Image (cartoon, rainbow, N blue to C red):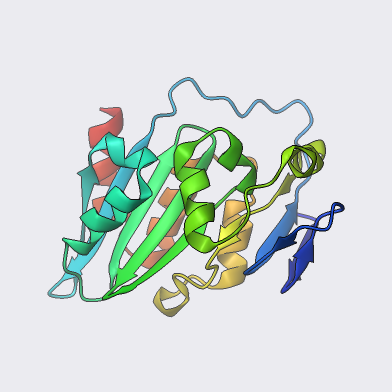
Length: 203
């Protein structure tokens, strides 16, 4: 990583405003690297804590394209520190959610995914962040080393993963979404139940 810049107000060249916080992560070594992984799959996992112990379960794959259905499923699972949802869509992007009572925090790893994937688009609508138009999308994609996330970077701060760490993880273009989520799980202390749930996806 060679540059991390944080803005509280952000504008594209066309003047559109992105609300909430955004990190731009610029990485080295992308040239010649192929991110496509034929083994990458879509999955959604719910993580919760009972009696001080973390557990994780696989959710129906249909929820990887249904934000409201995903939020509803998370609200059905009680948890001592809020119920966590972790979703990976192939090798493209991930979404992290946390439900604490009526409060729902959401984080999307890549704004550009909103053009091609319903879940990413639904997250931007939920966050009241405009979906980039064609000119803005071209601007975002022009630099293949730049990642624009959206949402609550402090979603896991009280559990030990601060805004900067989440920004760095989500902007690491060397990692597939499932790898980033595995790193998040390890950082938050539920690596074993998360990996067990992952094993049921990949066999």
